[in-house]
Amino acid sequence: MNATTRRAAVLATAGALGLGAIAAAGPALARSDVFTATRTTATRQDPGGAGYGMGGMGMGTGGYGMGGNGMGGNGMGMGGGYGMGGGICPGAGVTAPSGTLTDQQKRTLAAMAQEEKLAHDLYVTFAGKYDAPVFDHIAVAETQHLTTVRTLLTRYGLDDPTAGVAAGRFSDPAVQATYDRLLARGTSRAEALRVGQEVERTDIADLDRALTGLTAPDVTQVYQHLRMASQHHLTAFTSWANR
Image (cartoon, rainbow, N blue to C red; front, side):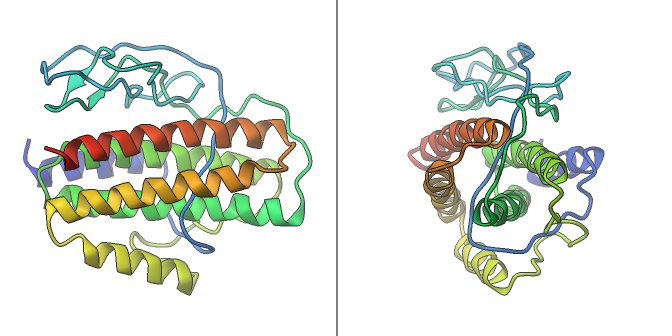
């Protein structure tokens, strides 16, 4: 499947989840999510070395997870060790009880949506330019993450800063500048993979800060799962960058 066809598939998946024109506004780069786990195993389509189990791309009946209870799960090995499948299927059900958020924690939650959109839009663009399926797979994951963050925003009665903004556009000038800077750096496949690594490292650091002092069970669970997902994404980008 060439890069253009793969990109179309990713965009179709995003559209099916109601993300045809997602938007953003707020601080730098971050994320969030919660659920009941439904396990699925994808059919292995390619040996591809030691596949890194990362949760199926299909939707579950509730449940989120980037697979990854360890290395080498079932799934499509993408050559040097990145595999989809054998994990917990993402879904939109936030099942942990809600709690109380401070004003700062509410702002952080809104910023998480912007970070998800920023990552998604970058990876979709890079997927259309370069022959690296890792961008396609992780872009789909970012779509699912944003859906879950939006669930939390609704639960806490917060405005969604990513509602109605076109791909690659952000209402917050600082976020727009960050996106433009990262996009401009992706002048080759190798550079785009380095950008992916930077985004995921930033997400992990942001989530670590966001978890400090947080007591709301649902938001805590979401942030913990998103941190795990970002770690898996970082591993995948690093594997591709080292080829």
